Every structure is written in C-alpha cells, then in structure tokens.
Length: 270
Image (cartoon, rainbow, N blue to C red):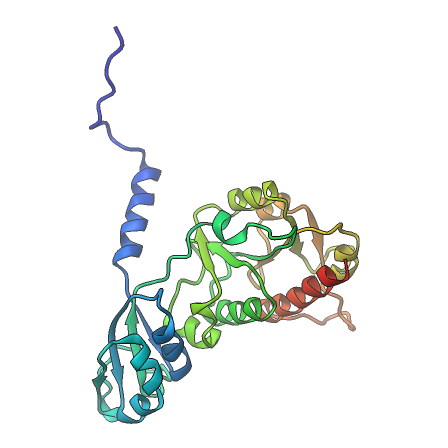
C-alpha cells in the first residue's frame, strides 16, 4: 500500500530561500528621491506609494504629479529633511517611500511581436548608477526588458531611480534567480543572444548584420570580470564593440547604450 506523502515534510533549502526572498521583496520599501524620479513615480498608477516628504518649493514644482497620485505630502524643512535618506543623497527636496515594482516574468515582458524583440541581460552588474543608466538607454531604444540576477546585482534603489531619470517607472527591470536558465527560455522564444566581449573576433555590427530577422538579446557582464563562463557558454554568439585605438574601452552603461543603438539600427535594416 502506498504511503501518503506527509505534507509536513521539510522543504528543500532552495525552496525555503526562494519563498523567503519573495516575502522579503513584498515587505521591502524603497525611498526614491529627486524631483524627476519622484515625479514619475507619483504619476505611475502601478507604483504603490506609502509616504511623500517634500519641501515647500518641491511641493510647488510637483503640484500636478501630486494631484494625479492622490497622496498627501508631508512638508519638511529643507534644513532638517524628514525622509530617512543617506546624507549624500541629492534629493532636491523630494522623497517618496514606495514598494518595488512587479513586472511579472520574462515571458510576459519579452514575448516577440511581429518577430521582433530586444532584451538586455546583465551578468552581476552591481553598480546602481550603471544599471540606472542602462534602464534609461533601454527605454530610449525600445528594449522589452532589462534582466539581471537577484543576487550580486543592483536592486531597485533611490540612487538607481535617480540615474534612470524616470525610466525605472516605465522600463521593465526583472531580477531572476538563475540567469542562464532565463537565457535558455529566451532562446526558446526565438531570441539570439549575443554576449559582449572585448576579445571576441567579430564586431557587433558584423555579427548583427549576419543575423536573420528576429529578436535579439544583448548580454553584458560586470566591468573587470566580464561574463561568467556559464553565461558566455549559454550565449549563441559573442561580439565586441569596435574601438579606434588598442586601449579604448567603455564602462558597462556606455557599452550597453552603443550596443542597443547598433541592435535597433540593424533590426530596422533587416
């Protein structure tokens, strides 16, 4: 006779960790700061807003956004600003406590439309300023999403949002447990994944020109270490950005902007 499985059996450690991460993310709050970041968050109906702290001057400048959000601001003295921000934060008299955005999964965000799609994947890019700048470029060039890892990657923070200059509210930023598994899912959806590597034999332009029409994913690693071995192995192709000199290089956010422009231009030409 088969024994009924005991529902009280101990869960595997990875399941417990995953459930804890989800609980922590649901409970977490983020303080956004700066007029642009706060204004765009106030106008975003998908953003859960908890507390708004403004100086009188900032409240005047954000009047229409406040009216759209239906949240009542706390007016604070600029010399003793009430929001619990890092002392070095350039808040411009505006801070908003929010819940992190939930964009869903990659299949929902990255489904190719009319055979086209553009995705950026970040392999352990942890600097929030770099990720914020990448989100801004991704929005400009029409990327479906920016995908990063849950660990060793920049979370949603005020510094990231300020650098993104509003793009965080509109550009899907997904953080996944396993990047290589997510890459495989994208490949099953028809994406060709190109890893950016300064030592690759072929330039990105030449690589893109040789592709048939279809969705493309650009995979970038952290400055210094670059792509991890597993990430590189999962890519379909690797390519480099051309440089005029032997020692020229770009930081990861600038490299992402150049690569996004090249990918968008190539897609229009195909």
